[in-house]
Image (cartoon, rainbow, N blue to C red; front, side, top):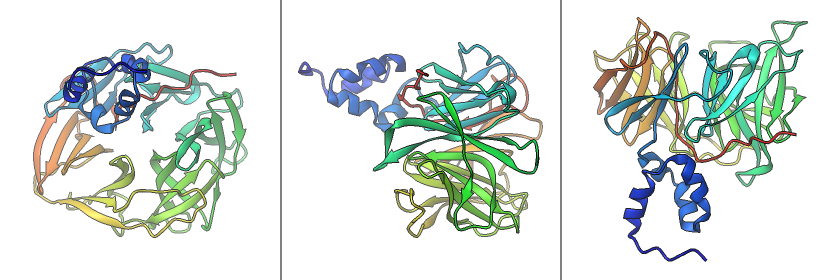
Length: 363
């Protein structure tokens, strides 16, 4: 039986918010209340060591916290082989995918300082890691564990890709056909987002690349399904379009018009539920925010998150310098250049820390 807590709950949470994340993992067994607290997104958001963006330069990684003061800290790297700037940087389920092409990929939890390399086989050239997901039962992670969807060019037909799934638990690979259900074919665009073990993308139709939809990939049956049409209507190829998770159980979509610089944020009205069979209920989107003022920046490959009713964006300017923009109430509230980051054009992504440990065992 756990010892009775003598201190007020508010004081306990304040104390624990100052404890290093690695120690919090060990404290899960103290009581059911503490274990539930460590899964509470509000607690993690208020933790003194939390951060919301990660940037990678030629030789260093940085975290950016917004509390609301913007603080940039260099992340210590104790990961052999990750001394160079990765080719891709994707946030998935509280893990960070650092793709190194021929060298493979590092699956990293920077909050817990845990990392695991996924190495390609000899016959696998440059790899494209598309995200981490899992098979699930009633929206919960099954014992089968995490899986990574990977693709690389087909040597016999460079216009096509070979698709494989890497299994964390067994450290094994298997081929998969990326079956696109009920569609004549789509091209996946940009980075995926992962929600409830399922990967979501913006995609364009193969027969008409001016038409865009949202699709998702289900690891349970290894198929791609259409999720919905774009809520923001037509998209020009020069418009910015970024898909993210909203409030941990919904999707959000940022669009910036390349002509007017107007920013629109759309979010799904309801929680995203089971999409395992392709029987998606009618998806309803709502316009969460619109910002159209003369001093809006041109966003270059932005990453973002929504904090209450404010939009926080990380983007580079035309010289490659990274900036943080805070937008709300139909205006640009503030912009701050990240002077601490050395070197132009850093890779960056939004990130929400997690106390989920990376599965480190392999057979």
